Image 1 (cartoon, rainbow, N blue to C red):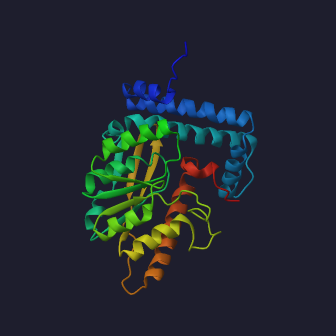
Image 2 (tube, rainbow, N blue to C red; image 1 turned 90 degrees about the horizontal axis):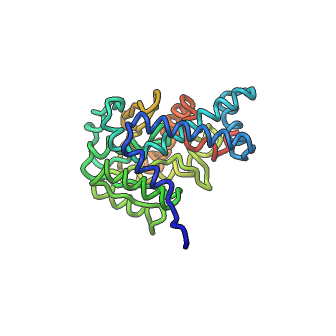
Image 3 (cartoon, rainbow, N blue to C red; image 1 turned 120 degrees about the vertical axis):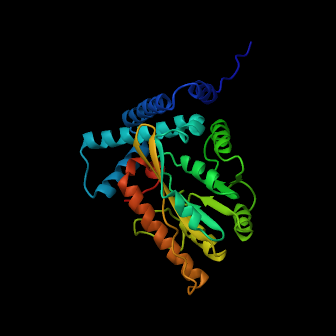
Length: 291
């Protein structure tokens, strides 16, 4: 008799839904540290890349103990993010989830492009958008396994039941977003995902007119949309703050390309500041090469 295949992620998600959010987050941290420790012991290639990036950001060579400690911090953070997905609806209703400058979104006029880096638990930013915006399109990239993507999409739809989710795997996703902006809807993009043409923040190493940063800047400029940056910061455990940055200035005197360049510069500067403040909270730290 063939034994049934057990989806461990799905089983673990069901178990976690019955636990307190703080316990779920702590369990994720423990699993993340174990994964990082295993990667350290087997000398995984991504560990070398992550350490090199941290040395670049610190502008010095790290001691072995520092390298291991920072790797554990990265593993802990990523473990929390994955573990918290099944309890996102409860997490964002928790008194430990704070929103700063929420009123900034009320000052927007016309279509808006929301940009967010993969810091802390970036998914929590969707909760704020779901409450504040009537019409929203969210671009996402299905990088995870089918089972994990299904869990993530259920959580996203629970906190944003009226949002339209656009996958990069669909035909012409950018055309869908452009049409949404042209019809007055808002769009959410996470432009720090690495692409063959570069990444954001670029730390001064790449031309502005390339990569996902340029794609987002051109999209907003071509549709006359404002850009609203959001940043999520983790404090301790499952306590987080979502900060709504003031909209990036839109200059009527600029051409569409000039406005795109201005947006690109401002986005990159903001994202670099945020990543430097909490480098081990940045999801892409092990996937890009800053040095």
